[in-house]
Image: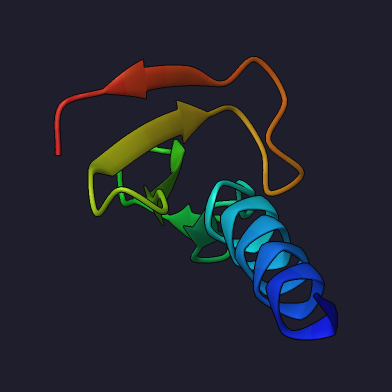
Length: 66
């Protein structure tokens, strides 16, 4: 009975860990010669997203194509 309880607890723990979402991994805001800043992020599903902003703190950011 203890073994079954242990297996159920381990299964529940593994399911809760595998479904958690991580924050995206992003570069810092990088300056472009035309005066904008851009940033590239990779989400936990492997997708890439790029953003443009008006300053290095990410003001007025909008998603752009990578």
